[in-house]
Length: 233
Length: 233
DNA sequence: TCGCTGAAAATTGTTAACAAATATCAGGAA
DNA sequence: TTCCTGATATTTGTTAACAATTTTCAGCGA
Image (cartoon, each protein chain N blue to C red):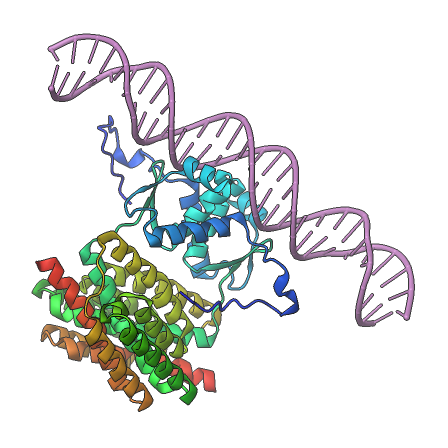
């Protein structure tokens, strides 16, 4: 969950000055988190009077936060009726996996072209740390937990394409997390995934962008296929 | 934009029944159009009192519309300072082209797999119509005008992935249009582009998803390269 | 029971006023 | 001149009240 904050704060001395966050921004963050964590159930109504009481603010900034969520496609608003938390069906989840497959492939190719030796070392470190975790705990833990996300996040970051990062690690990540919460489904092939991660890092170290792209697309394609199998079953 | 009228209203003329659009939604549409067309210059400040006067509404719904634009990443808001129309530099434009290259490749592959014979016929019709326009007017016209967009839109639509459509033909299209307005740059290789469009349709007709993807990636990669050359010059 | 009606309640949309922060700019000092 | 200062004006953030619409639900009749 350690996402870099690219709107960096100005200076160390100013670090103590509390950022002038507006109520709207605060509530936007809290609502988005609540939605992504499933505390606000997919498909459920967003009740303005209730939430404004709950957060202790008036409806003005709350409505602005909801409008921003609408722009992010996390809620849908029908005029004179209200906002509903977006809800994904399996077809829509597959659509997102298709996009992720393509874009993380791109990220991998770019990362292979642009990553420095230090960057590759970081990736190796990360995988080594994961290996420790896996051995000390249980193979099940790895893919299901944040370890998988850390790996993907780092590669997308190494791609150097900041819009790609925002898209994959922001919007699409939120939607997929929403879907997982909604269906209580978790990825379920930890050992294989770990092997594939190693192969991908190998390709990155060899600066083989095409291979890295291919491997990542396969890697996510497998997860997509698992989902499709569930759909057909 | 047709009105869904569930209640059996007298219906003297459905066209006259004004849709229950909120002021916020109306102004959102108008602002987005103004931004994408460049009427609100990139980087310029979004002044609430001025706009609320101009549109004849109060600041409440106007601010909601601006917050929604923020969610769409078309404006950036700094607390206590206000909203600015987003402005893209060349690096950011290249980032978008990289994403488009990958995603339109995906769209092409999916379109090749899913498009029906009728769909392919529609594409052929579209290209034939473009060919007429080109011959009757000027080769310059084609790639610069909406013809190019029509072609890309249709393919993305044929992919059957609605989120992909919203992403490519919604968000990314708006941003690229913004960049073109900003730099007054227009694509400049109409003849070659037209040939490439034909090749892509050929691949689609042959149901060759891999080739279609490759060709589309090259097609957009060329446009990206043109941009990079401008950057280095 | 079922479905309809319509008044009451709750919710959403909009506005205007006030509070707080920032931007502007005249005036003065080095 | 150039750079500060600080009073003023403007803009943004927030609230509460009002208007309009939808939802709820008791009452009624077939």
